Amino acid sequence: MAQYVPTELGTRSIPRLLFQYAVPAIIAMTAASLYNIVDSIFIGHIGPDGSWGNSDGMAISGLALTLPLMNISIALGAMVGVGASTVISVRLGQKEYETAKHVLGNTVVLNILIGTLFMIACLIWLDPILVLFGASEATLPYARDYMEVILLGNVISHSYFGLNAVLRSAGHPQKAMYCTILTVVINAILDPLFIFNSQFTILNCQFSIGLGMGIQGAAIATILSQLISLIWQFKLLSNKDELLHLQSGIYGLRPVIIRQIIAVGMSPFLMNLCACLVVLLINKGMKQYGGDTAIAAYGIVNRVVFLFLMMVMGLNQGMQPIVGYNWGARQNERVWQTLRLTILCAEVVVITGFIMGEFFPNTLTHLFTDNLPIVQMADRGFRIDVLVFPIVGAQMVIGNFFQSIGHAGKSIFQSLTRQMLFLVPGLILLPPYFGLDGVWLAIPVSDLLSFFVSIGMLWWLVRKLKE
Image 1 (tube, rainbow, N blue to C red):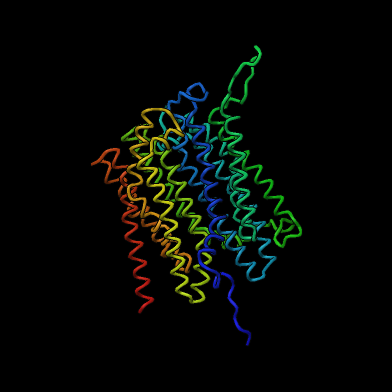
Image 2 (cartoon, rainbow, N blue to C red):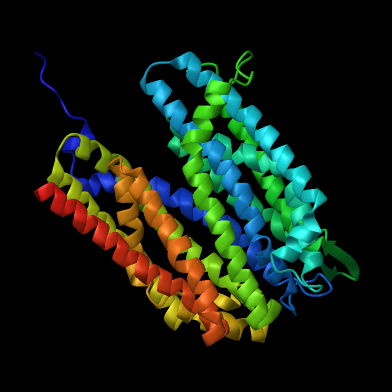
């Protein structure tokens, strides 16, 4: 009998493996987060006349109001993208190459169909939806102007995110990362050109740079940057030398494939949908207890905090294959070593975020706006939001650890527990007693309670293994 020879996942040193697998994921996740931060920075400095500076904060408040709607779009995109990439990985592993090709073709068609239907439905009821999300007379025009463009390009967005996930599953994680970075760089270049209109004089001649389209310009820059990356994705996936590539005869929708994609993608869809509900309730609370200024402040805090969370998600992506392989190989010591190291790295990330949020919130806020009321409100929001941030890293890693060892149900339970069992009731119960601070406090309270749940579940697993 041939002796079983383990791959590098079972033999190579854990620190080197984690570095090898996590760094590309962290770069991709950070780039994706910077993508939103860049938009927010430029939009936050749009003045009432559309120029840079003297911002009244209504533009960034309008942008924050679009988050729930964007989350729904992301949820649908994740359902197709994550579902398709997982099914493709399985089919490639089973050497069912023709089925994998048809999954790719069905992914393209599904993204177009769902993106189009979502666009039509939202454009018809856009104003009532934004008012439901907390828009006022002052912020509704900004939110509408931004979302109209984003929705018109929704098919591009869905296809871009979906094909990026397919690239990773087809064995091209670096190319998927490059696509994300390319989108961020192009967006950062186009944003000021489309948003502002700067005028200057040289040798008595008047010159102007930029189109001065305001918040609509930011949305156009976003869609154009995704379109350029999407064209490159199509080029990469059209290479006939690759086993998985776009070709005729693979675009007919197959009910079996669609069911498989949706079944696998339902988990991230539900989690993103819950995130939509949470942001909706937060925006409602901010508007009720602090007005449009509070919504703008939350939009700033959320963007920065999300940057650190995305880094931890990148670490989790790097941990997942290492833990999964060694768990299956019953190399438990390597499993626990990977978990400990990942938690340590995650703690470095979140403690950095904690220090910046607690001690340098003013510096962070001024990146987005110079509006004094927003700055003051965001500074306080930062300090409350990151109160228990040092434990968030461990909580996120433990949740992903359960998914890595095949206990996906426990991972989903932990995520939904934080959002639905702790955060939603907190957003309902705390504000009547603590006002605006109560809205902010609901976030660290839910993180703290969720941490205890995670520790309890991990302790139960370790005890069961010992028995």
